[in-house]
Image 1 (spheres, rainbow, N blue to C red):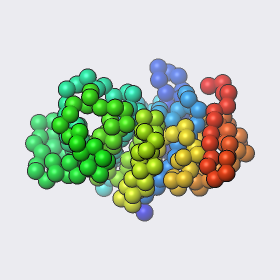
Image 2 (tube, rainbow, N blue to C red):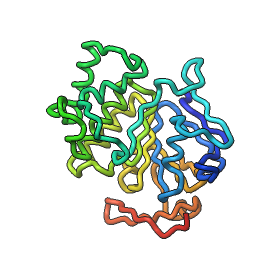
Image 3 (cartoon, rainbow, N blue to C red):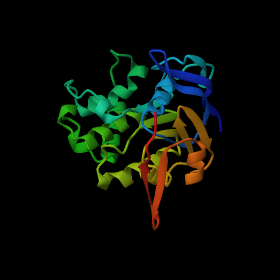
Image 4 (spheres, rainbow, N blue to C red):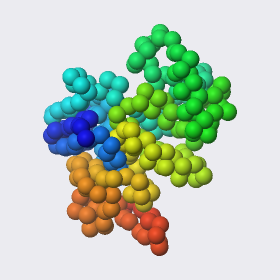
Length: 251
């Protein structure tokens, strides 16, 4: 099992404000890491650092992609759906195919095989019937399924998802996480979520991000451990179904 990306002593933020402090994290092939923590604690900032969207104030981010020290085509990304601009008149199929843009180039033409792959992915996600619609006509849940197809069409080594259950309808939520479990056979996954109760059924390890990052090498986590990590989340269990609420925090 090889390394995909390694963060060493990374501090990062915006306009001089430090959001993440001295973060260390290694992501290996077939990892399935759940990122939890309060709003403003740095979860999305962590993803942006890995994606290269922001540069750390200090520390290093190293990618392991053959001889290259850049993420290139090894990362697929599903952003928070409410951050996606749906006003651009692009079809669902073209959105999925755009996940191959780094391979084909902006002016590249997609092969029949690639188009067939895009349609197969849409069918697996249950939105094949929407293939010719523009993204502005989709619901939040439908949009999320389409952008998941886009994130994985290039067969990345690492898939990163930012709050994926926010707009997923209840009927699809279980199927969604089962799909992630299946994808984990072929790629590592990092999923950011407030829903500790749901993701702990699926992830292999947990990292609590609240300015600092505390890595927990298992999928189970206790209230005492959360307190030790300075992570203001309270776990409440009803029978076999865990629920979570956020406690008051000062960040």
